[in-house]
Every structure is written in C-alpha cells, then in structure tokens.
Length: 186
Image 1: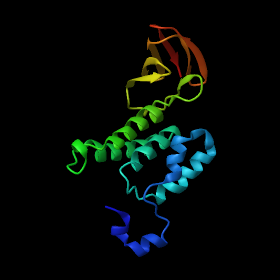
Image 2: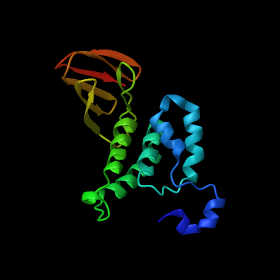
Image 3: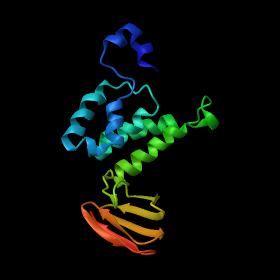
Image 4: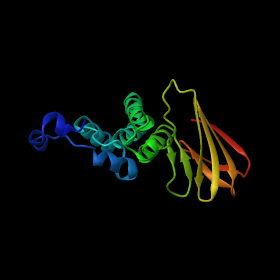
C-alpha cells in the first residue's frame, strides 16, 4: 500500500520517507561513482527511509546489498521482489511485471554473482549466500557467449561462442580460449 495512504499525504510530505531510494538506484547503476564506504553510508542512510512504494525498489536494494556483502539484507529484499514480481498479477501485462523480473535477474547476477560487464575485461566477484550450493547463468558480452557457474568458492567460465578473451575472477585475470572452461578459486 502506498505510504501516503498509510500515514496520510500531509504527514508523508513532512517526513523523510521516500517511495524508492533513487540514490540506491544510482549506486546500483554507477557503482564506480560510489566507492566502498560511500556506497555503504548512502545505502545505510536511505534504506530505512524507503517505503518501497515501487515494485522495482526491492530488486535494486537486493542488488546493492549483495554487492556490499550484506547477504541477509539482500536475501530479504530478493524474497520481497520475488513475491511482488513472480506472483500472477491481473493488473499487469500477461500477469507479470517484466521490469521487476529484470530487477530480480540483476540482483542475482550483478549482485550475488558479482558479474561486472564494464571495461575491457568481463569480471565475476561472487558473494553468494552460504546456503546457496551453486548459481549458473549465461551472459553475452561483446559478441561472445559465456557460461558461468559458481559453486562454493569455485568459479567456472566456458567461452561457448566467440573469440578468446580475458576474464577476471575476483582480482585475478585469466585468458579464456574458445570452447575452453576456466576454473578458479575465489
């Protein structure tokens, strides 16, 4: 329910409550602009003030919390986003909210898996919750298809399609040849 319905429009206008934390969305979209402590400080400031009035809010909060290593907080937001976006909704196109599903994917792949698509090297720096046994996904990056599997402290990447490339696992960069599988411990 919208926060202005819960506490009233006048009270909402006088409060520090926000529908969705745009600064948290900026941290998700531009992580290099909010290095370490700045991201944490902004997340800690805005998270308790956010009413999550948008169905997109929980997914973005899950993504940022996962990147910050706040696993339990990230999982709570992931569950909230999944509950909102995976249940059938007669008021949305086809019964789903496609933008919300995109937010879930981003929280899992960019947050928990730590997929980094920017720059000249594809990177993975996972922060999986301890009770997740594994996470597998594919990504397309610069005309290449890469299958990635994270299990415990091990990351595997297979270059399914495209020419050879460099890939970063945590802080280590390795060469990934076409058709080859690269495995590293994080």
